[in-house]
Picture 1 (cartoon, rainbow, N blue to C red):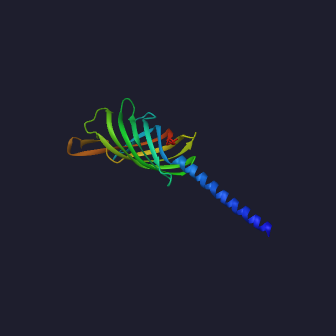
Picture 2: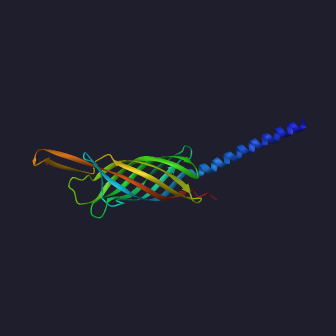
Picture 3: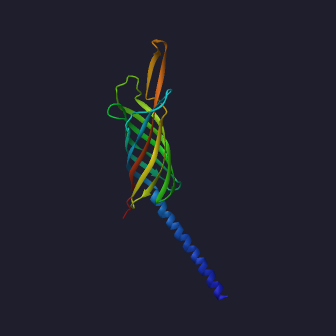
Length: 214
């Protein structure tokens, strides 16, 4: 009887201790993915021109798409979602033919895991055209594009993580248009051109922890 009672108390104590350990582990893990993060992002890849004539490379050289961004993330820690915004500098093309943009990303990342996370991101870019070569009168000064970016984030220290993802973007508004006639006769026909990008991004993020009050 005493042995059974002792065994019962040991089992109960072990269950309570295990539950407490799991709760503490969860709290530490939640702290690792909640709050604000700031990071820098570098992307290289290919740009394409899309029109009624089909899809073509922006230029013949690779890479012809470069992006440098400063990003800010926020996660509540209660749900596996982090929100993303920031400011990015993007160039489609090379020194002879290009479009240069200043971009504002607004997106949401769904993630699985904690120290190593699989991330599925999606959102929009609002882009302001800074310059273009050659100069075009029919260019759009502002454009909106959609993006999707599967990848992963891996913690490399207590406050830093490595981020690698593949990103595909597609313009929802035209970047320029051309109006012409068939063999010099009317009616005139207008062709609208859209851009898309396919690139790999690598970045370093820093977790902005709150300082504890003494």
